[in-house]
Length: 95
Image (spheres, one colour):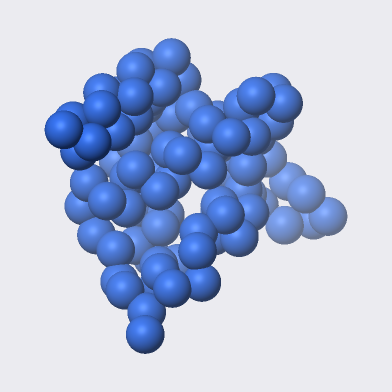
């Protein structure tokens, strides 16, 4: 059984994946973010990229235009604001 994520839960998964990679000072592409999501969770491409755009607009992640192997992509990285939001959210749900 798979679960389709939306809203805050989806944002949390994306930020968590980016936060893990940030320890190594790396950016992630959308496909790489999806690899960090458990197989029991379903995120389609349009939902992923809409959420990435939302997180970037809120300042929780950065993204930049890039071309890799001739393909346009937007690598992402979590910001200090994104880290703080994620930490606060995880503390809240643990209560």
